[in-house]
Every structure is written in C-alpha cells, then in structure tokens.
Image 1 (tube, helix red, strand yellow):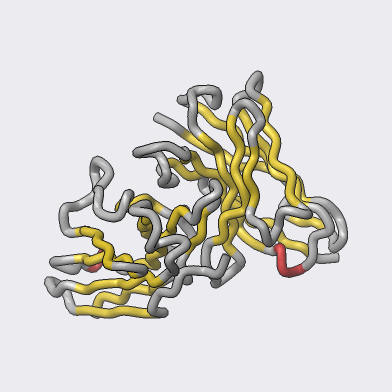
Image 2 (cartoon, chains in turn red, purple; image 1 turned 180 degrees about the horizontal axis):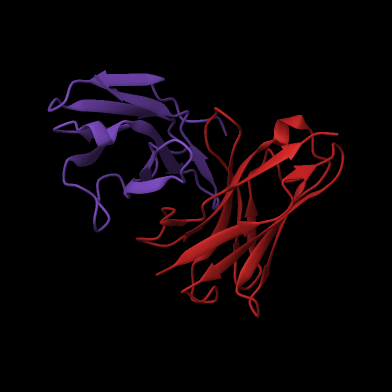
Length: 121
Length: 110
C-alpha cells in the first residue's frame, strides 16, 4: 500500500523559507510517477504547487514559481518542498500526492494526511 | 491559471441525485478529458472519486459518476447518503504539465 507522510516545522516566520519533506513508503519513488505538492489555506480550496519526477524534472505553478523549489532524494525515497519569502498568505495545510503525466496517471491517487504550516512572527 | 468555477454549495435529501458543475476554459477542461474529482471530509485529505472525466477508481461507489460537455465537467451523486456530505473539488490538467483545481463545493445532505 502506497503511503505518503509530510513532515516539517508547523510554524515559520514571515520572510523566511518553508521546508517540508514527504516520505514515501510501500512504493519506490523511482517507479515512474510524478510526486506533487498541493496546499489548502484554512477554509479555502486546493492549489497545486508543483511536481517532480525521480530524475529531478520539475514543473511548478506559474503563480509560485519564483519562490518554489521541489527536490527529490531517491536514496531516502522522499521528496521535499521549499517555499521562500513566505507571508501570512502561505499559511495552509500542505499535502503531498502521487500522480503522473501519462495516460491513466494524470490524477492524484495517493495523498499524505497533510501538515499545517502557519506563517507568523 | 484561474481556478475552475464550482457552485459554493449543493444540497439534497437522502436518496436524491445531485450534480456538481465545474466550469473551466478551452485551455483546461475543454481541451483535455483529464478532469478528476476529489471528496474531502473535514480535517481529512482529499480522496480520488473520479478520474479521466468518468472513470471510477477501485472501491469508489457506483453512485458517483462523471461527465463533460465543452468547458464544463460534472459530478453526479445518485442515491445520496449521509456519508456523502463533504466538500468536493474538481481538478483539470491544464497543459504544459500543470494542474488547476476548482473552487470547491460543499455538499449537504438534508
């Protein structure tokens, strides 16, 4: 069974960098899927942040691209998110999820439980 | 990319059918048959209910069905049950390896 688990600080100061890691178990991150980050501000909708392939290929939401870096560590079967220069608007539950960019794989089929990150001084 | 437009809320009585719309543009919903739908209960992660517009993952009830016409995708829940009360989000592939989610719809079972 594929399982994803987010981890990282729950509180980040304004202007600093948010860093989260998603550990994948029950499935090799190198098996051919993409791995994405999605966030949800409190009481609001979902927003795709970006995705990465095991080779390091990345795709980002244009609205966040200048501040986002997603990386992968295949030896640890995990991938990470860094979001710089955060403001209160970046306060959200951050999810990691599996998907693909080929036939039959475009949907987000496995999700982590999510982790709340609050931006506050 | 702007979020796909969904009604803020939809309600129905047990046993009834409801339909949630998801309106995008010719650059996302209209260009690809790659809309997925997610159910989210309070405090929980989203759960995949429909993919590629109308396909159900293993384990998802047959009461959930999806369709698309032009720039609008739809999710229909038939035989509404109390457990269906949740938030629902559509998501479309938007080209150039990007995605856009819908604004979300709160389903209330009366």
